[in-house]
Length: 56
Image (cartoon, rainbow, N blue to C red):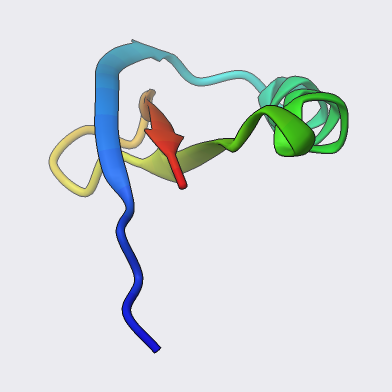
């Protein structure tokens, strides 16, 4: 089984405790449109988060 995940966009944003709620809602709402959203803490600056949009 081959996985074709394409990165559409990545942006660094100021970290907030509630960012995961937005990512979770986007993933639940748009998964049928083959979109997936990711959030990671920037390892170089823990005040920043990296938000990524993928096409699956």
